[in-house]
Image (tube, rainbow, N blue to C red; front, side, top):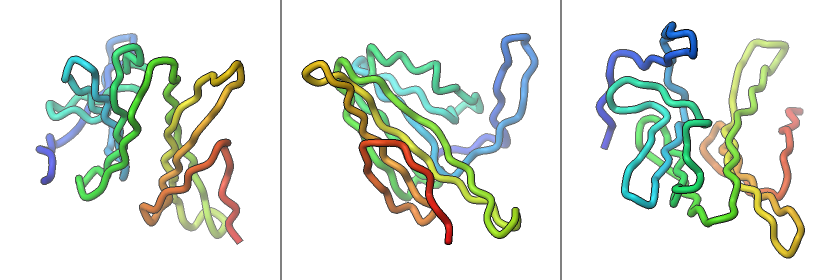
Length: 138
């Protein structure tokens, strides 16, 4: 089921100016313990930043394809710190652009920091690793 799509999403800067933001292939949703959901690209046309997520109330973090054909869920527990970033790649001397979408968490277990990262590849497969990495293109 495809989400309703406004013509454009806007982001309001701290100085009050607005900027039109184009959707990307994978977007996030933050599901909170009180049943509310904060979407990166809201149904009303507002773009939300990752820093707006109240991690103290987070119960599930979802990465979903913008067209709603696939998603990956991360169940969130107290003590976890949410991680989300992109990796951009220019291939063949800048001829092709591609992006990977990374999300995961960091937490302390028995006094040691533990990190788990999930990287969504351009073909929508996922790599799970305990550290950040950059893909090598050969």
